[in-house]
Structures are given as structure tokens and as C-alpha cells.
Amino acid sequence: MILIIDNFLTTKECENLIKIYNQNEGLATQWPLNATGPCAHVINSRHIFNPFLKKIFSRTQKVVKQYFNPKISIDWAELKKHDKGVSHPFHFDGAKANTALFSVVYLNTLSSGYTIFKDETQVVPITGRLLLFDGQKYFHGVNQTQGERYTISTWYKLSSLKM
Image (cartoon, rainbow, N blue to C red; front, side, top):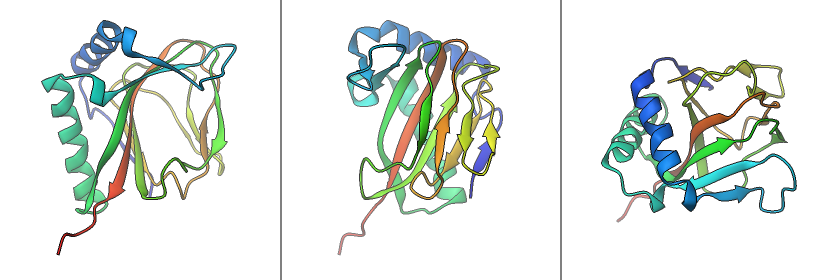
């Protein structure tokens, strides 16, 4: 299932998250690491101690539990800024074997930088929109941005039950 929820965040909340990114830009790392042209700049959320950001993660977690599986929890998340001209080729999320879901929250609206799927589905970056799907099941990427694209990317794992 690919789930899209519009107005998941308000414009003001998105502006606040972009401000948090900009205030912490010194913590950003380039992705991919060896890029020689336009690239993404990623801040691991574990490096930002901000109660507002934690509140947003709690909200996404509730959606995951409601629509997917109550045993799925956040593994890691990133505040991300893509430079103008960045794209990301089709791929499956294979960073970790236990990754169960992926989400992206778009923090600004663009007429480019769509999340694209191999079946030709395209999800337009609209301020406050949440997109959730299994990144190991759906072959996906990002088409070239014509402006800076701000997002929160989150990966989720299936939590094991303790006996």
C-alpha cells in the first residue's frame, strides 16, 4: 500500500522544520558522500534535540500504527535538503534488512522533485504532505528538482516482541 495524507503538517509547522534544518545546517552531511555536483544534505534526527521534532515523529508513528502495523516503530529519520538539480535513481530501500516502511514529509511545494515509482505513479511534493510505503517492495526514486526540496525522511522497523 502507498498511503498519501495531505495536510499532515500545517504550513507553519513545515516552515518551523525548515528553520530547524537551517539552524542546524552545520550538522549536515553530503549525500551521496562522493557527489561532485548537486546533492542532498542530511541531518540525522538523533543530532537535533528539539521537542517539536519529536512531536512530529510521534505523529507519524501514530499513522504507521493505525494504517500499517502497531509493531512497526521508527528506526531512524533525517531532515534533508536537496539542492536544485538533484535526482535519485530508482531503487529499493536496502540500507537495513529489517526496514519495514519508509515515509517522507514534504516541507515545501515544488513543481519538480516528485517521488516516482516504476509503475509511473508520481507523488508531487506539497507542503505538509505525508507519503508512506514499503521501500523494499516499491521501486522508487526522485525526479530532478528545479529548486531546493526540504523533507523529513523516516525509516521504520518491525519491532520484535520481548519474551
